[in-house]
Image (cartoon, rainbow, N blue to C red; front, side, top):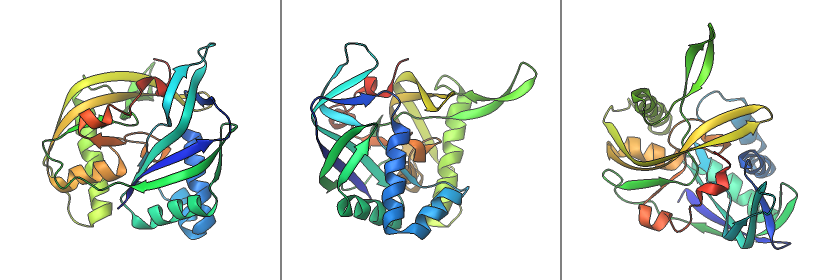
Length: 257
């Protein structure tokens, strides 16, 4: 089991959920890993290869837009999903959460109430998927005479080419063998969101419902470690079976268009 649902009981209710919050969850993950396995934390920070973990946006059992429209207000429990292709990462993060269940995120305090392991689907090819955190795909293009980062959309063929190549790179690191080419995805629904991932640095990413076909290993690499780029800062987590996933997904958690 390398995918988990993490439920948190808030100290105060309602609790605030800022639109741009992925970096706060990333900080929590690294702090808990560092607590249990400092060497692993150092390797993750220094490595240039895929980190091979991802996580969802932060959600709430009930939520509403704050009156000033600057954030969401959550009620009852908060929760998020975490997934990794590396058992060592799962052991360190989950172990760190259980050792220190008091959590502070963006000034809100929570207690870890439940960590639930989620079984992987036996077969992924041919299934529908829905994003629990949006998919980011970037390239370099000449703009104003200089190469600049460009956020691709599902309307552009390069979007799918780069997702496939990214999956092949993850496959190589997970399975240690030559990655296959067999991968195809068909987007059924897409909604863009713009995030501030660091002060002054923005990323346009996509909430998607899509169907994927191809090699089971490639699809499992995406299911476990995320589709697209920047998975370790909160992009690209998906859930199989759109009907179940839609019970939890709230695109408005992610920010303003």
